Length: 181
Image (tube, rainbow, N blue to C red; front, side):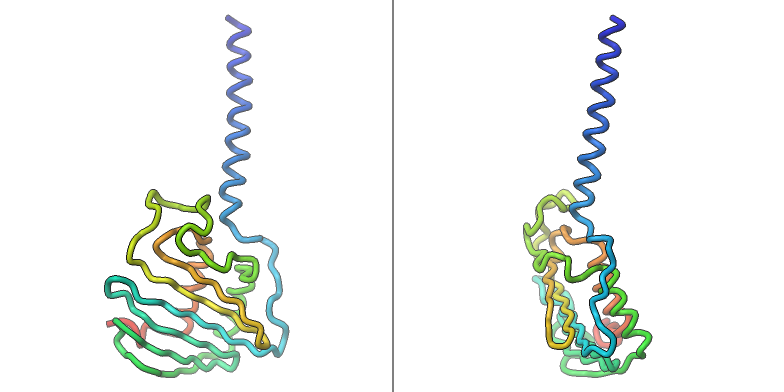
C-alpha cells in the first residue's frame, strides 16, 4: 500500500509538470516575440493605415491613413457618421506613440493573416468563428516597404496586443469624430 501511494504521488507530480510545460507552450504560441525590435529608422518615411470592413450588420466601415508628418486621412464608407473623405492633424508625439505601438508589438513578427482558422491553437473562445464580423486591416509602410496584417474579428486567434494596436490607431487618429453615430 505504501509503495502504491508513492508511485501515485510520483505519477501525479510528473503529470502536473508535463501539463504545466504544455500550458506554457500553448500560451506562448499565441504571444508575440518579446524582443523589442526597432522597426523604423530615424527620419524614415512612415505611413500607417487601419481599415475596418463591412459586416452583415451595421459595423462601421472606414479607412484611416496616418503620415509621419501627422496628417490623418479618413475615408468613411458605410454605417459611419461622416461618409467620404476628411482630414485632421495629430502631433508628432502622437505619431511617435503609434510607432512605439508597432515596435512594442514587434509587428513584423506577426502572422500576416489572422483570418478564419489561421492558427487554431490560439482560439480563445468556444466558437469556431463568429459569423458576420468585420476584418481589420492594418499596415505599416517604412520608406515604401509595406507590411499588412488582416485580422478577422470573428475568430479570436490574434494576440491581444494586435487588438490594442488597432484601438490605439483609432484613439490617436480620433476616428470617433467621424465614425460614431
